[in-house]
Structures are given as C-alpha cells and as structure tokens.
Image (cartoon, rainbow, N blue to C red; front, side, top):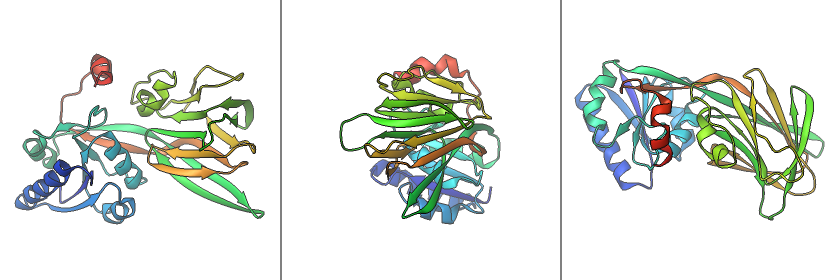
Length: 277
C-alpha cells in the first residue's frame, strides 16, 4: 500500500492522539498518509482518490460517516474501535499499531456490505430538485419537532403498499438491521445479505409488520402534507422534509468494503455479545 487515509472522531482526544501516532508509524514504514476529521466529509472526499485504504478511529458512527464520504469510490475501510458496540470496527486501540503491518502487506480479507441509494425529490415554486445519498445503515423518515404522527405513503415497485400513520418509517440495509430498525421491531439479517428492510416506527391503524425486501425492489416514500417531517441518513445527515417530498430508495451498485485481518468467524456466534455491548 502506498497511500492511506486516517479518518478520526474529532471530539475524542484518544482518537486524535492515535491518529498522530498512526501517521508517524506509516511515515516510518514509507507509506504516505493524510488525516481528516470524520465530521469533514467534503475534506475526506477530496483526499480519498488515490488512497489504498481508509483507517477510521472512533466507533461505528465514525465508520458510517467515512463510508458516506468514500462512496461511490470503493476504497476499503478498517475501523479501530474507541466506541461502545463496534459492530463494524475491526481492531481495538491496543491492536492498532501491531496489526498495521499485516494490513500494509495485504494479508487481510474483504468484507463487502450492501449500501442503499436514496434520491430525494422536492418541488418548490413548480421546480423539481433532487439530492442523492448513499447509506450503509439506514434511511429514516420521521416526525419533526411537533410530537404528532405523520403520513408516509409507501410504494413498492410503483404500486402503493400503504400509507403509514406513524412516527416514521425506517429503510435499513442488512448492516443496519442491528441498529434503529431492530429497536423498532425489525428482524436481524446476515450483514452480507443484499436484502433490506422497511420498518414502521410505532404505526397507528396501518400496516405494522416489518418487511424484508428483495434486492431488486424499488421503494418510494412520500411525505404527507399535514405535518413536517425529517429525513435522517445514517444518523448524521438530517434534512427537513416538506409535505409532498418523495424519497426513492433502491439497492446501490456501490458497496462498502471492509479490510479485515481477524479470522472469519460466525456473525451469529458473536451476535449476543455484540448486542450486549
């Protein structure tokens, strides 16, 4: 490897300290590096081209920010865990330097995870605007500041499924199935699956069961006009949604790739331990 990015949690002093230590180690190993706060997505995007690996220092939230910034470039990510759960991370803080030579030598294996692609379509003054996002974990349409349920019209492959009257709707990847979707009553999917979930949040007099959707499925969520809503992308991008806004969601051709050096183990054998933190 010739060039490695270091993306760190800016509000964790241990993360900043380790980022400096890791940069020094890479320099002494003849490897170029760059470093950026995970909160500066534009800076990460600018630097990631030409990188062989991105090392994140923080928790799963830091990885989600890095994955958002790296996409659609499929540069591998290796996470060093300073957080609590570490579902996505690979190394502990004590292993970070010791395991780095194995990563540099290419002795790891790639763990590919499906991403979703969301197109947000708004209409203002008769003009249509669109924004596109990639997500590794989940896309959430939820009620805004007023504590009232919202109407979310859900269509699958162009056909109306239902209008959810709920606190919101979660569309989650298999990776995200152990996050907010699980708290809302969704099932757990194997993280390497391409299927994804649609889970209503506290639905009232509307379809309750969570749905497991085929990778070929196209979902459209349309926000009702009565109350304002909020769109959350991987828990760190938040956009206000006016009534009538449409969000089209599908499986992306882009994947997040993790470079791992630990032996492959069973996701199910470690699931309970991970969930208990």
